[in-house]
Image 1: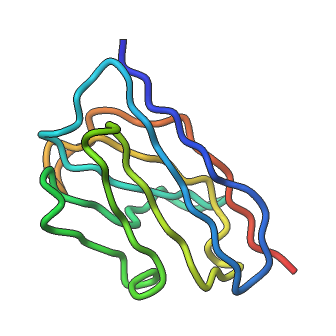
Image 2: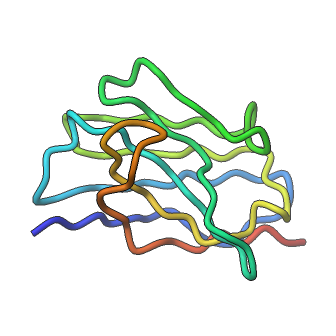
Image 3: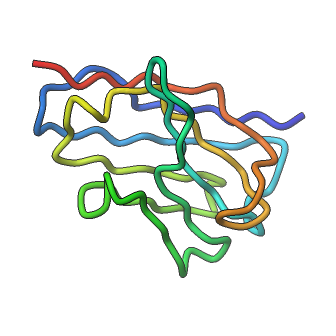
Length: 119
């Protein structure tokens, strides 16, 4: 049975950093695109970033480009999101996602982890 377990969320002041992790069990992620999405209260879920199966290609939403970095470790069956220079508007529940390919449909979702940026 597939499980995607996220960790690393929390509360941080503006300008701070957090690193989200998502570890999978029950599925080998090597051949999938891996993405991070977020959903703020009252807003639709949006894609933040995605990394291709071999890690050679990454995409970022304009709102996080230059501040967030996605990476993956296929040996650990994991994907990460390093978030720097956090802003209050980054406050949301962050979800990792297993995609057929980046920009493609999501096959599996993580349970979500809360990120709150506030002074």
